[in-house]
Every structure is written in structure tokens, then in C-alpha cells.
Length: 440
Ligand SMILES: Cc1cc2nc3c(=O)[nH]c(=O)nc-3n(C[C@H](O)[C@H](O)[C@H](O)COP(=O)(O)OP(=O)(O)OC[C@H]3O[C@@H](n4cnc5c(N)ncnc54)[C@H](O)[C@@H]3O)c2cc1C
Image (cartoon, rainbow, N blue to C red; front, side, top):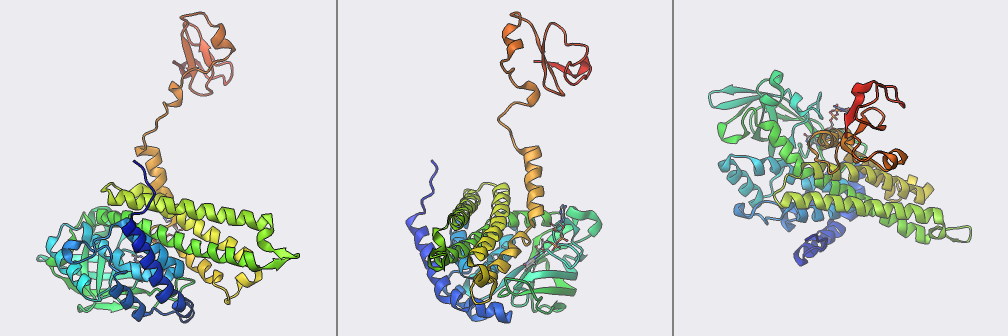
């Protein structure tokens, strides 16, 4: 059975997240964007309310929400401010490798700690010289006895300047590529961990983004998330569950751009009427509406697949790619409806547009999503249609007039079908020789 109706509990969660977003995030969003700072009190309120960490499993003292519930929450947060949504959701990203780790004691320790106390955990694969190519990690994990010693730099780390814990991906040998990737939970206070300056950004300025440097940081064996050779798969499993949330951010941001544009269109007068009466504006609104709706369905599907225990990798890429691209288009058209005012800092659209620009970049660029999707479509995807060479013969004059029992031969190059006991010496259309023909 296929259903799109949220359960009463999910509707409650959505309502609760919306109220939180309207009460705690929307009123401060533009201020923190302007001053380029992250409001710790808002993060603390999100933690106290249970909006942050909603997905910690029940066995560790969490709410045990599924991904569907988490993306309902993130859409609401991002509708109020994508930057603060990124910062609040970052704990889920930082904890995701723990969820998939085989290290039961590590899960017990950090999930429980994060559920009980206001603790932030960030996620670190990217480095100053690499982001998309996760197998190209250079941060070195040198084995010493049963422990590891980390040396290297992580970059672009959301909440890196605020977090207590870091899920860090490193390599025992860069030359081994995927084979060397491993992962650890590192504590910020450990000797040798340095936090860089806050990176100034175009948008999502309410989120904290920094570089983190490791100099001879000793990581005890108890803190291994994934041993060498298993870290790359752990990162990919993480992204398969967090990319739908990026899609949900994009839906939320696009939705509020659309809602503001609709409101503005109903009020703004031109040529003696409201601009909402112009078909050109109505078509923009129709396009925005269908894009937001479509993106949300894709995001829900990906989250649902994850909650069903299916591998959501492909649905996650589809939703992240589509939602992040339409969000920018929707914000851009909303700005067009606001026209001059859209281009000012007096109205929210310019901030939403700057915020939306990031969706196409973090957690796998649009180009990376297209690599994943084309790779799947070209290899693992199972078509329902037969190969073109084996297509049934279409009815045409030759087919109708042929002698009963005559064999049919299809030219593999141009598709011409020849009837006879033998293929022709040469195709009459494309001039390829007899060998191009296959018996149908
Ligand atoms: C604000 C912000 C927050 C972030 N937060 C985090 C975080 O918390 N943790 C973390 O680990 N990272 C984080 N990132 C990093 C982010 O994931 C990377 O920026 C992203 O993966 C792209 O990597 P890159 O910037 O190094 O670009 P590159 O990988 O250098 O790519 C440059 C360009 O080349 C394209 N490209 C690369 N390879 C290919 C290919 N094979 N085929 C076609 N095109 C290709 C890319 O799509 C892109 O257009 C954050 C980034 C930003 C900007």
C-alpha cells in the first residue's frame, strides 16, 4: 500500500517543530546572518526542546525518531533559517557514523552522553585540498600499539568551533585510497586539537564553519568508529541518510521563499491591480509550487526508504540533487516577484537566496550526485524494456507483405529490418555489411 498521509504523531512533530522555528529561530535569523555568528542560546533551546537529537535511538535515552520525523523537523527549521537549521541538524550528521559503527561501547558512551547533556558533535571528512573525493583524504592516522595518532587538517567543519566531539575521517595511507580510510570520535579538549578562525561565508552565516587541525592527537582504540578499510563505506552510509535532510532544508527554504512571494504578489499593485492578477506572476507561482511539492515527495520517499531499512542511497541522491537545485530556482523567482525590494536587505528573499546556494555544494555537490545517479542508471538499474536489438518488429509494409515463415534480420546500426532466409550483403540504409545484421 502506498500512503502519503502523515500519522497523528508525525503531524504533532511537524506542528511542534514549526512552532519552535517561528518562536525561536525566525525572530533572530536575520540578526545572526548580519553579524555572522551562531546563537548558542538557540541551540541550547533546541536541545532542551528535543528538536535537536530527535533521532538518538531510545536504547540510549533518545526520542528514537525515524528519518521521516527528522526531515519533517528540518524542513520547518530551514523554512525559518537554513543556516540555523544546518547548525541544529549538525548533531544528527555528527552522530550518524556512530549509528552505523560496529563499536557498541562507543555508541553507548557518546549517544548516552549527547542525549543527557547539551553536547555538540560535528562531522569531518573534508580537508583544505579535498571535499568531493572522500577517498583522497590526507589526514593521517598512524597506528601506535592499539591506538592511533592523528596529524592533519579538516576544513569546512560545521559547528567545528562549538562542538565537544568530532567524528573524524582519516587515512592510514593516502596511497591506499578507499582501503586506508578509517574514522574516530575525537574530543575537542584532547591535546593537539586546534580550532581555526570562523570562515566568512556568502550565506548560512548563522552556522559556524571552521578548520580543525590535529597535531599528534592520540586516539585510544576505544574511540575507533571504523577501522582502516571500513571508513569510506561508513561515510557513504552516513551520507545516504543525511542527504535527504539536506533535501528537506532545501524544501523548507524554497517553501518560505514561495510563501513570501505569494504574500507579496497579493499586495503589490501595478497597472491598477495586484501583480498576482498577472498571468506571468501566476505562472511563476505555479512553477514554484510544483517544484516545492515535487521536492518534498522525493525527500519523504528517501527518508521513508531509510526508515524501512532499505538502502536509501539512490533516493537520497535524487532528493538532494533535485531539492537543492529547485530551491535556488524558487528563491530566484521569488526575488523576481519582489523585484527591487527582493534585491534589498529589507526583505528576506536575498538571504534565502544566499542560503540556498550552499545546498548544491555540501554533503556532495550536484556534480557528485549526478555521478552517483548516472553510475546507477548505467550499471545497476534493471530496465523493464528489452534491449533495442531485441525489440519486437514494428508493423510496416515489408512486414505485412512478407512470406509467412520468412526470417527477419535487424541491422544493429540503423534498425532496418530485412526479411529473407539470409541477411543482405549490405544494409540499404546505412551501408553496413552483412555482419551488422542480427536475426530477430
Ligand atoms: C558552509 C559549508 C559547510 C560544510 N560543512 C561540512 C562539514 O560539516 N563536514 C565536512 O566534512 N565537510 C563540510 N563541507 C564541505 C563540503 O562537503 C565540500 O565543500 C563539498 O563536498 C565539495 O568539496 P570541495 O569544496 O572541496 O570541492 P571539490 O571537491 O574541489 O570540487 C570542486 C568542483 O569540482 C567538481 N568535481 C569534483 N570532482 C568531480 C568529478 N569527479 N566529476 C565532476 N565534477 C567534479 C565539484 O562538483 C565542484 O564543482 C562544508 C562546506 C561548506 C561550504
